Image (cartoon, rainbow, N blue to C red; front, side, top):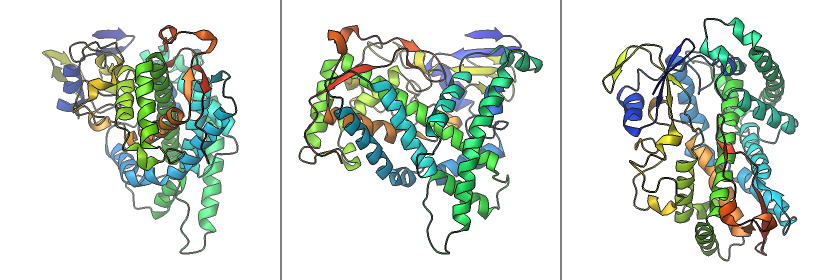
Length: 435
C-alpha cells in the first residue's frame, strides 16, 4: 500500500512475500532509517543501534552489541538478577493472594528492575523517575507526527512543541544516565589492578571506551544512546509480551492449564523454577511463540528508508522512500496461518518458524540486517517471569468475569500494549520456598 504522508512517499508492507523483498532480497537498499525528529533528539542524533544510519558507524555499534553486550554468555550472567527480581515479585503477589492485583504494572516494574540491574549493576536511585521518563519517551516516539511528514520544514518541530518535549525528556534522561556513567567510571579508575569489575552493560561499554582503537570513538553520548535502546527496546517489549501471554492464557483456560501442568511437573520437588528448567518447558515455548505472532513487540517494525532506486514486485521504488513493515498484519495473514485470529500454541509444533527472521511470515523481532540484536535478552526476561507466575499461582478474573469476556483491546504505539491493565486474582500459591 502506498501513502503520501506530507513530503514523504511511504509504502506499508503487509505480506511476507513483499517483506522478504524489502528485508532480504534488497536488504542493503532498505537498510537505512528515515529521520524521526523525536527519536533523533533523544538518541543524540541517531547515535543508537536502532536508528543509526546504515554504514560503518552502525556496523561498529552493532558489532559491540552482538559480540560484547548481548551475547548468550552475557545474558546468562544476569541470571541471578532475574531470579532475585522475579522471586521478589512472587513474594509480593503471595501477600495479595485472593485479592485483585494490577499484574500489568507489576510486570512493567519487574522488567524495568531486571533491565536496570543488567545495565547498571543495581536499580538506580532514580529508578521511579527514569521508569516514568522511559514511558514518556516511548509514547512521544510513537505514532505519526506532522513534523516528520515535512522534514524540510524543521520549524514545525518547534511550532508543534515536539522538539521542546523531546529536549525536556532528553535533559531528564541525560542527567540520570550521566550520573550513573560517572559513578561507574570512578569505580573503574579506583579499582585495584587485577581485580575484575562487575560486568554490567555500562561497565562493558566504559571498558571498550577506555581501550580505544575504534574507527568512531565511543563517547558518553553513544553509551547513553545504546543504554536507552536496551531500556526502550528490551524492557518495553519484554513486559508487553509477558502481559499479553498472561492475558491470552487466562482467556484460554485450556492453554493456561496445560502450561501450568508442564511447569509444575518439570519443577516438581524443586520448590521453584530455575533457568536450567526453562529448556524443558516445550509447551511454554509454544505459548511464547504464539503470543509474539498475535502480539509482536513492534506491530509496525521501525521504519526503513530506501538508499537508492529499486524495483519491488514490478513497482519502481524511488530513493528516500519510507517503508513500514506491518508485522502485526503479517502474523495474522490467513494465507500463512489457519484460523489466524485464534490463540493456538500447538500450531508451532514441528514448525521451523523461529525468531531469527528466516521465515518472513513470522517476524516478531524483524529480519535481515536490521533484525533486533537483543532477542536473547528479551526472551530471557519473558520466559522466567511467565514460568514462575504459572508455577506459583492459579489465576482468575475479578468480579466473576468470564474468561471469554476478558477485554483484549490493543493500544497502538511503538509497542502494542493492552488498552486496559490486566487485573487478576492470584490464588492457591504453591506452598514452597520462593527465596
